[in-house]
Length: 538
Image (cartoon, rainbow, N blue to C red; front, side, top):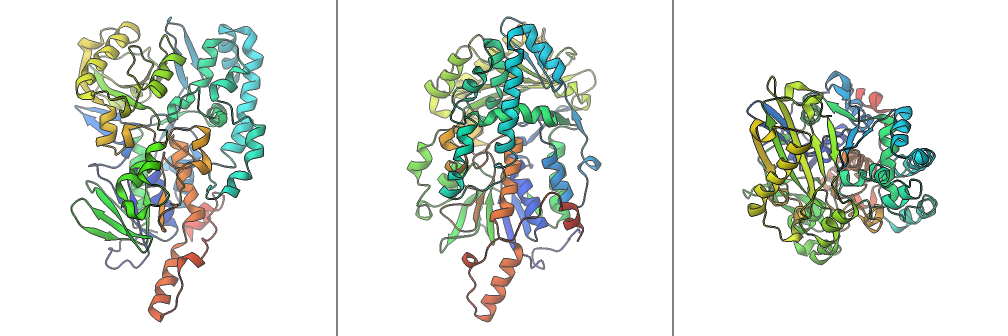
């Protein structure tokens, strides 16, 4: 039901969501369905967070997420509102999922076609076909536990973690992604093909827990998709769902501090000094940034500055957005260009934190699927290079253009001949930009690094351990980065955020002089995905 009441006349409990990335918008939809009046506050001039949309001279660039998997997580959000995703967003399957280009020029087309994948594997190493099949079976087993059973579970206690340890041991979660892949596959090039996925969520394949090998089966099961209009079409669709529930999204509105009274979050103070009260606060800001910069140190006992700074953080990214006055029809939608080094480069990025002379790249050409994202006869791209976060000490004001030119030279020599003379639009985002524009602690593009000792219970919790009525969603909390991860973090809220009626009862109790603190009221059971359409229609 559409609600058009103003905040002055809307008596529903108020939820503030800080940040309008996929996690924040998904949280706002879920809270709106559950009876909250929701206000989303975004410091940028348009919604999206890391999925912010850049429009330049007729080109449309998605700033961040470009690989859409597990589309049913979006479908569930529309269903909760009594709508169908397909009526509002045109999601198109992309194939190959990725074209992987090795330094010697050979390529591997990574698809969801089982027979085609076996042929690709055999063309590199016939002896690894059986091992690949066994690896995929292992990926499915990990998916059944890691995604289907655990992605939506709040790990708020030691007991919740202890219960899953036997299964984690059985599935060899103590091994790294690369280590597990290598136990099945012998060819080094195929090991790289099957182990690169952690880089899409900020992890080093040589240290990221093998839980993340579930991505291989997840992609096989649901495919890789891209929305017509770009991922910004999904952002706009979510904003419209929020507004249809009577909520609002306020851009160019920076939050300076989460207001805490008596150990509870009671609202936020904006950069302009205004205070907005709320019954609950949900932060979609980077979890480290939330604790380090949005909460007063006096309000933090567990997430002190020292603890925040001791965590390991993901790598950052150098991203170059560019448009050309010609089309490159033979370039796939998603291309991964692997450099001459794999382990050594990742060691430089994650451990030594130095800006290497070589690089591996992810090249996104959305105009392969949707030509409307560029003017007629033109192509739009972005290319990203994993680089160390700001602890490297790199001065990106000095290095940025030099680094861009090196990437340009490699692309021109490989996939995009004549690139330099064909450029129409050029813009970059550096690790410094991730910190300054996107409030990413140390410029880490994916927040907390997904190693085993920083997963599940060991990540910053979805329900703050320091402040009551403060909740966290997004890449830096459980279950982690990537679009499915941040959407799942919002789904976790269904089991840890009290229903709106709880606050209504508290208000009535306060009016009558009855003590009814929320500590003594358990959250209502979340609406399941299966019953969502019926619930939304009531």
